[in-house]
Length: 219
Image (cartoon, rainbow, N blue to C red; front, side):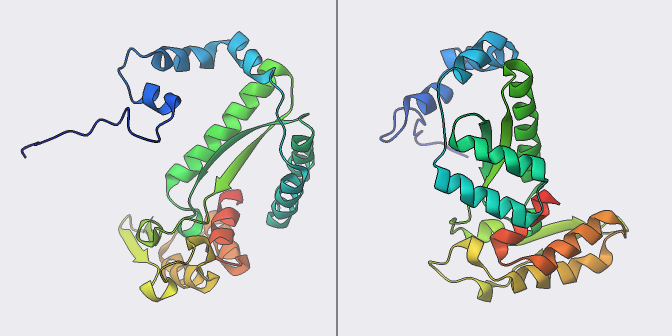
C-alpha cells in the first residue's frame, strides 16, 4: 500500500482543544494527566467541587423511563438528586444495537458503574451511572447485525431485514417486530438458562429497537 498523503487528526476545523490534546503527541499534558487523575483523590475532589445539575424536566423523564424498565427503586430515587446537584452522575453511551448491542456496550456500562462507585468512595457524595442510548443515530448498517455463539460453539450471524429501515428513520424507531424476529431465529440455538430467559422477556416487552436495547442492558 502506498500512502500519498496524511490528514492530521489535530488542528481540523471544529476540533476542541481537548480533542486536539488527546490525539496529539504522547507527551501532551492530557496523556500525563489522565492516568494520574484516576489515582489522585485530590483531583477527583477538585472536579466535584464545581456545581452541576440537570434540568428537572429531563430528570423526571429519566426517572419515569428507568422505572418502566424495572431499574431498582434505590437508583431511581437517586436520579431525583441530579436536578438539585445533590447527586452526581457518570455518563457513557452507545447507539442502540440488536438486543443491547455489542459486548462493548456492556463494558461501557460496567465502567460507568465502577467510576460512579469510585466517586462515591472518594467524595462521600452520591453518584449514579447513566447509560445514554443514541437512538437518533441513522447508520442502519452499523447496528443491524447480531452474532451469537450457539450451544455447539459455532457462530450464528443474523441481521435486521433491510425493509425495516428507510432513509431518515432513526435507528431507535425501528419496529420491535424486527428485534423479535431476530431473537426468534437465534434463541433456539442458545444454551438454556437465565440469560436466554431474560432476553426472551426483553424481546417480548420491547416497544421499539431502542427500547429493546435499553431493556437488554438493564437485564
